[in-house]
Amino acid sequence: MSDNAVSDHSTSAALVRSTAVELAAGIAGGEYTAVEVAQAHLDRIAAVDGDVHAFLHVSGELALQQAAAVDAARAAGEPAASPLAGVPLALKDIVVQQGVPTTAGSKILEGWIPPYDATVTSRLRDAGVVILGKTNLDEFAMGSSTENSAYGPTRNPWDLTRIPGGSGGGSAAALAAFEAPLAIGTDTGGSIRQPASVTGTVGAKPTYGGVSRYGVIALASSLDQVGPCARTVMDTALLHDVISGHDPMDSTSIQFAYLNATKAVEAGRADGLQGVKIGIVKELSGEGYQAGVMESFTAAVATLQGLGAEIVEVSCPHFRYALAAYYLILPSECSSNLARFDAMRYGLRTLADVRDGHALVSAEDVMSATRGAGFGAEVKRRIMLGTYALSAGYYDAYYGSAQKVRTLIRQDFENAYAAADVLISPASPVTAFPLGEKVDDPMAMYLNDLATIPGSLAGIPAMSVPSGLAADTGLPVGLQIMGPTLGEAQMYRVAAAFEQAYIVANGSGVPALAPALEVSAR
Amino acid sequence: MSTASGDDTATPTLTRDDVAHLARLARLELTDSELDLYGGQLSQILGWVAEVSEVATPDIEPTTHAVPLTNVFRADEHRPGLTNEAALAAAPAAEDGRFRVPQILGEE
Image 1: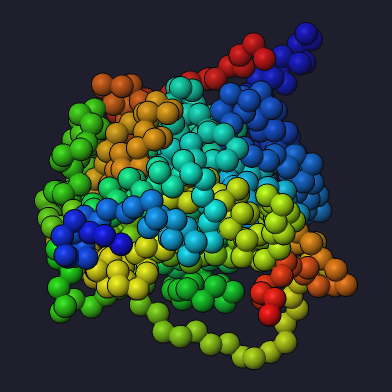
Image 2 (image 1 turned 180 degrees about the vertical axis):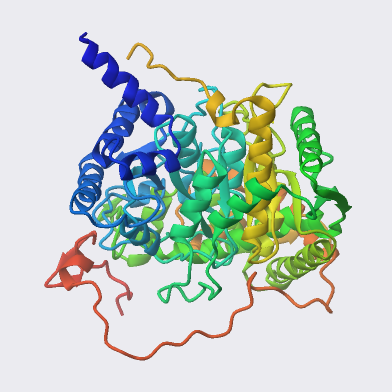
């Protein structure tokens, strides 16, 4: 191998370990091109994704074209399209991108090519962000481990025998494996925050309605929220600023004053947390939490105190009903949303004209057969649960009661925010568990979103930032920071101050400690 | 559907027939082993989620949406949409510029 090749390799290795901020600066300053950055990440994907399986589809050619357009604009002297121009990104495969296969992790959409872009996708494109491909997820975003993907599980880059969280395990694993510096996730009950927690990365769920859901395949419409994922708080904030804002194409998108998460991060780094009141939610830090997770959380509280924050304990007594309410509201909405997969206009159609010697010709038969063949076990389970909860005679007792619990949880949050600016808890009750450990036990699996679900029901913004490695497993732990409705700035300020203090105390951030995943003998 | 007591929200026990009925309502063809599996799992989950009725008293307003919204209107203006070709491109079957679907109404 020539010296040249060696130095190419080291440059490429340095590029994939860079932050989005560093990459954007390097491209803007002419140190390297957007095409070189995209190619370095495509090479990394080629080298490690056989082990990690973060991606369902890699669109290399399209990514290089997008990158070349960024380079051409720069060469022509045009100003950068955004602070993230030329930076690569991994897109969760539930967000549509025109001309690129989208499956939502389901066989029922295998081979489907969307004829249009989601609003998030077009905003990324307009910002000059380079989309590398589509990431793996639990089928229709239902799950906490990415084992429900019809295309096989994603593996946690920290330990390939363990889960990367779910449903956005592919997006989180792509970040932890240095396959992309930025990713898009969707969070319904914790699918951005819980994977971020168990992979040692950062993920933020914006206020409900803060990012358009147009072109995002619906799971539970009153809960689904698109959000940014990255390895640093600043990168997450920059992406947040690119994708957020009102969209007339989504009637649940809210009108609000422009959020500048980036400014909030700068404030957190510069000013610390003097005068900030942080509430510890009593109900989210007790039973059911792994010892190593609680130790890391306790240390994080001390760090926040050291930054000048005042720590108070708050009680949210109705949080104990959150999981139950969630597992009524979500299946009810999903049973309704997934009715669109009817084998008529797009997607799979399993049509046997004749079965057992009889004609099988009715649309209802075709629909039932297709859905039976095309949906996986967890999707069927939740559709059945939702159908039951919404059926005559049970609606009030189940769905109606769950919606009332949601009111109580919102009131709990309101009371808590009267006493504190932000609330904190561990983001996931446990560190990454072994693949297969809980896959046959739906109830055990549902408990993994224990800490994230209350915030989903209330529609508040919340994020997970790495708080270190658990002493008992050596695996990453996430600190959840929850803000009041549209309180993203407070949330990012605390996250940025915490991250900076952690790096000062430990010499590096958690993502830098992720195993190198040097290419095995493949 | 049968319940352990007369109360609708007490732990329900879904029989195999109940599951088959639900699956028909949901247009979901299930295998025999799925019918067996889901009965037990759904009963367990329903028993657990029924605890929501413990605190859901009549005086509490339900929250259907996390962020209060009023109706959203827009001007009734012509806007470009998908072409006929693009809309049919992903169809399992198409004919004469239309979706081709199996028989929907029964024969009289």
